Every structure is written in C-alpha cells, then in structure tokens.
Length: 130
Image 1 (spheres, rainbow, N blue to C red):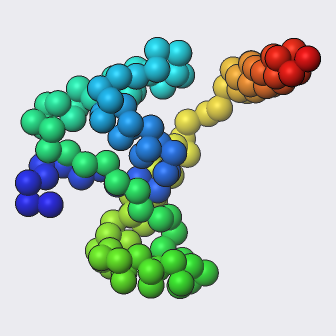
Image 2: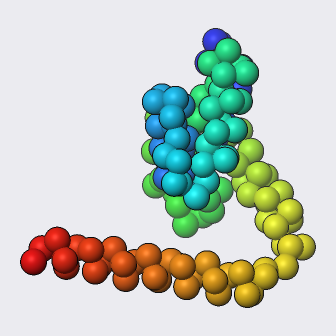
C-alpha cells in the first residue's frame, strides 16, 4: 500500500461493497437511505487523490472461538496488529455508542416503514406474477 494514503477497514462486508461500488461508479442511488454518507465517501476518496482503499476484514478474530478464521486471515497476509487494532476499534465504538439513548418512537416508526415496504414489495411481486 505504498501508494495508499488512507485505508479504511470494516467488518461489515455489505458496507464495504456499497462504498466501493459508489466510488467505482462515481454515483449513488438517490433513493438509498445512506445516500448522504455515500456522497461523503466519494468526496473523501476524491480528496485523497483517489489514493484511499476501503477493505473488509473479518470480525472478532481476537476471540478464541474463531481460531480457524484467525489462522486463515493471518495466512492470507493479515497481521496480529490488524487484529488488535480491529478489537480496539470495536471497544471504542461500543464506548461511543453506549451513552446514546434509543428513541423508541423513532425505532417503532422505522420498523413499521420496513414492514410496510416488505408488504408492498410482496404485493408487487404477486401482481406481476398474475
């Protein structure tokens, strides 16, 4: 990575794929709920003279329960420093998230919107099949 200015590592494969697709295509689905964050990712990428990478890393490799995954990660070029850094980032994220209270009303509305969307999609599939 000698030509890389910034490496962003995440254990969320879906987020990594989404950000990399947005960067590669230089476009964001306008209806995506995280369109504003994807736009920032593209801007950030461009600010680094296109010398940033977003990569996936498996989670919880510091856990004794994941010895095979840890060995595979290390065999494929990962380092113990990567694993320790990821574990430290997880702890820091948890400390940052813990003090925040969940607004249960907003959570209820979000879950209701999700269920309505799923029902609507199922309805459209049924209509299209008939």
